[in-house]
Amino acid sequence: MKKAALSFSLLLFAIPMSGQVDHAPTPEVCRADADGWSVPPWDILRANEANFDRYAGQLMHDPNVTAKTMQARRAEMLTCMKTDKRVADQNRYSEANRAFAIAEIGRMADYMQRHNLTEQFFQEDEQGQR
Image (cartoon, rainbow, N blue to C red):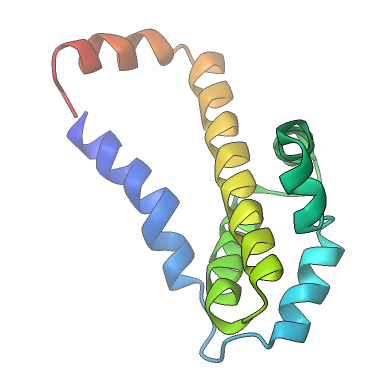
């Protein structure tokens, strides 16, 4: 189970970091990409948690967005949080990063269910295998 946990950690954290480009995207590129990926503006996300949930749910079920694509977008959004100084945009990127992560984890959970791995996960977790 430790190997699985390590693999999971690599999947969520190490791989996106390795996908970063040498040059950080400009704020203009960050904003354009967030728009192109239909990330709701910060004021809409802030207004109601249901707006965030709807976006994360759409990502989870979007057949045109692969898990690897979500990882790359997460990596870019993390970079954009550092390079774009507008607070509303930083918050938007942060929420986009969170939505991509939740959608990816949701897909992993679906995978575990389809392959009958959920019960094994719970058993090993109860045994303290992490």
